[in-house]
Length: 248
Ligand code: NAP
Image (cartoon, rainbow, N blue to C red; front, side, top):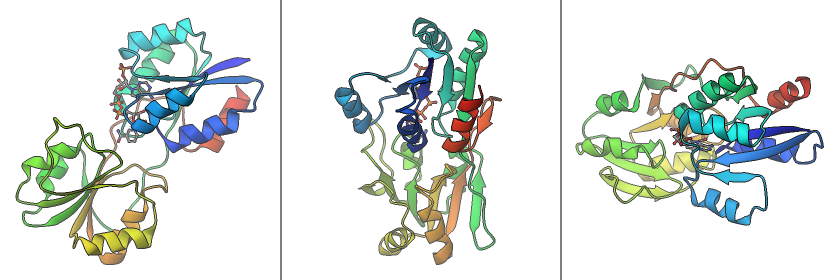
């Protein structure tokens, strides 16, 4: 039996656990950063196989992989979770264990889209137009970067509230998981008279509704590009990850 450490925090990671749960040839252990209430509750309800919290950089991850006799490291973290993916790459190389990154494909603009692409959040902050109203959909940890644009109005959407010490961009906050529904997103953009959407190029379907809604309404999307991923072996979806696992 091979022992897998799965770095999670995404739907792909959950799907992979479900798909591997009845496999006798793999024992899967999931790791979460523990940023969300859902993650902490999952740990409370879990009997085995789930750990929460950082490892302590590359050295900590190497030690954990060694102590736990992990054979395979699967990185199914979010495309913007750069540090943990690079740590995973270096740790797996140090130990010479099998390592795969599941990195869903980035969204590509369609002919009817108007995207202003920013290489970083800082560039997106600079690119905004004074006096405009924005849907800020980049998650609660980084929304505070936009607080200094008090010449704009933001509908800041996140699943959980930002930590109290973080600055809040001027405007309103909406605690909501995006449904991916196009009509719902369109109604939201209209209700708040949004001029443009700010988001990360996360890829996948779960949060693509706002991009299509912006397209339908002719709104600009400030698309923040992904950080550079490590040069790991990669697949774009869970099914391909399963195929890779079956081959090794
Ligand atoms: P990050 O910047 O790459 O990670 C920062 C530190 O958090 C890492 O160095 C590591 O600490 C710890 N960490 C991250 N993911 C971990 C995991 N799965 N298990 C154990 N420790 C982990 O990541 P982030 O952007 O803060 O994201 C944190 C988590 O949220 C990830 O699991 C990611 O999949 C999920 N997420 C992120 C985004 C996003 O936009 N960034 C969106 C949706 C979900 P040590 O160095 O101490 O090991």
